[in-house]
Length: 466
Ligand SMILES: C[S@@+](CC[C@H](N)C(=O)[O-])C[C@H]1O[C@@H](n2cnc3c(N)ncnc32)[C@H](O)[C@@H]1O
Image (tube, rainbow, N blue to C red; front, side, top):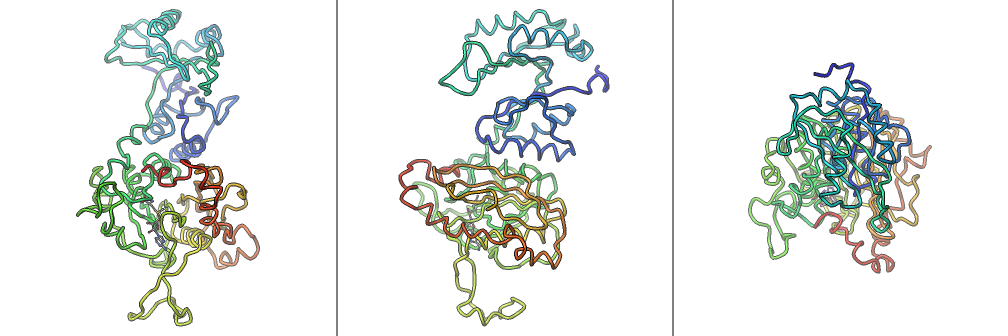
């Protein structure tokens, strides 16, 4: 078997999916951070290409990343690479024999796969390519059905389907280590979920959010705008205890009109708990309750490991909060008398984000993460619009385009300091700590004539997988 020293200093090749381009880097970085490993790309790293070569990892690191990633398709121990087959051969012949040997000895079984990206090869051509690798010192027996080791020749023909080169742009050869979790996108699809709503978050994005938040086993995860609980479903899959609130009584209690075609009313047991039960994670369900995210209902303590949420934009759901006809009647301690009947008031988007960041600063544990979507009007967007907080460090900001004029940005922040009294005045000294006023107009801009013309892309519920 290989010794730990002969297996050190290896390079690993990750094949990334081409969808969700913007979310890939923060996902892999977050999964590395869970193992206290930095992101060390090899020379000539380019973020938008399908293959990344990373240094400084162990095989165990790679396996644990792949056990979580929905952006990475597969990972390999890289043995050789080059722009042509001749250069690949030179590179492979330079790869230390002692690193290859444990997987090539005479008692081992193996197979070689050929993968081409952005083109397809005839079976006979693939066999030819495998035969041409006879310079590698394989001593074991080929087993197509159950090999101990799988090797892959990966040919990259670029990303433009209208411009496929005759020869690959680049070629890699390596030992397959693991596949990522792309299968979760299908197995957790909202199409087959027990309880859904108009704004249920798509499964792939829910898992990406849980990964950006570094959710891990036994964490306590909270979603203040829980809706049908799609984000809780993803976090529970990764072993976190989950809990949420929503202002909508019908959503929390699974009552009222159904969002499904051919169904008028929600059936019995259409609720978040049943969703977790569907995926075998009911034991991770703490509870959900009807509550207004603008009101403080939690004890004043930092006990939440991750806050993951999709606040209302006011497009398919209302942005309302509770209040009183006469705000002057509100007592100074914020507690209404028992006879108080709350009324609904507009909850401005800028206030939603200010409240969310303040809540996170107070209730996240140190190092805990807030992951949320920020809707933006693209022609006016600039990075300075992303709300900041003195206790939260901005980790990543990824765009998902919704239409030519609108997008939403997946914002990840990490708590780096406990809030002090002075932090409540921070907005006076730095405009980035003050509410993002532009959001108040998001709804009007979304429904503006320009957007309506943009057809299919403009459907937010489509983006959410319905
Ligand atoms: C975009 S949806 C969340 C969808 C959710 N991620 C899911 O997968 O179903 C936003 C939710 O926020 C809720 N909401 C609106 N205003 C609220 C408030 N003031 N406090 C708590 N929840 C609120 C809405 O009822 C809605 O369910």
